[in-house]
Image (cartoon, rainbow, N blue to C red; front, side):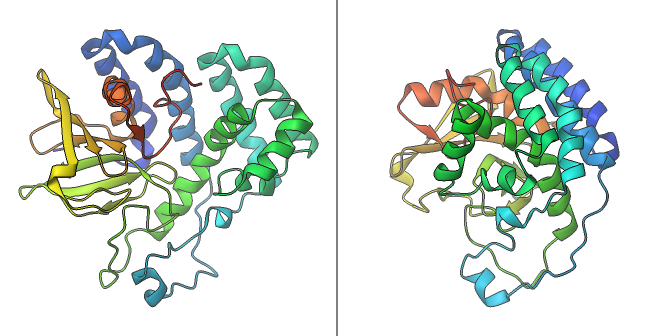
Length: 298
């Protein structure tokens, strides 16, 4: 069984999970130290956000069945006040975890407070094909594009998760067979097996929505050829794996929760960074780029 996922318990649940991870994987303490303040404060901010409604949502079952997500990333509308609130709440946590970019974080927060960076610009950085707007903002603020995108993603994520919560569960009659998120179209950061039958689920890297997916199938290129797939794992943590696809050379970390307790999905992928290292050493790329799985990155 897994732990309760009540939003109201999320900050404390994350703190407790990080204590266990530090005990089990002391070699990853530096990564846990970097991300714990941020993950806790993101969860707390999400709790404080007003509920997101479904007003104006026009779900087209035919388009959905053809693989069109319910929302585009730019449908996660954020007001100026809420973006400033996110910057106020999350910047200190980012500064604590990533002191090397403290100066850049201050510049980004100042730009948000002055209106130089609008919510629309911030959200647009998360969309595919955003290179032009990202380069423009990078040039204006004199901050590396990778740092900008990393920070903007952290600021927006609580809003995306709140919006996704309002749309779940999806109607039972809707069928989704894609490896990207049915809510926002982002790639999964985590695959996991759950229940007596070992049903496979994917967890979105952007809005945290979870959806069922075929057991033997690559989420990224959709190949079903078993000879194109491999799982790697550590013998003493066999319930944690990296699912490799030789067709597209991408991977996703995976967790078998059928016989595990105290699994906290908010930090599950973070606790498998050692598998990210192994997969990337073999030449594979993460299907979803998260803050922690770009080895040698932020």
